[in-house]
Length: 50
Image 1 (tube, one colour):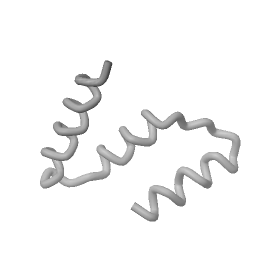
Image 2 (cartoon, one colour):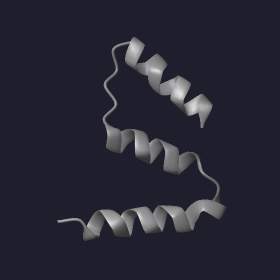
Image 3 (cartoon, helix red, strand yellow):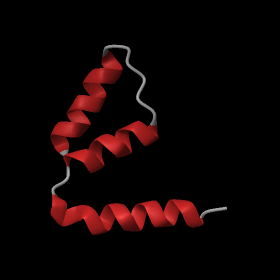
């Protein structure tokens, strides 16, 4: 996770604008299959918001 945070800071320093949703997608893609439940829960929570 720290490596990803470093990546996001470096990208921003180089003028790249990564919105929050893009950052979240990058984090999810970096997770192993053991975290699939976490992603499903997150996606369900987003859909339930008004």
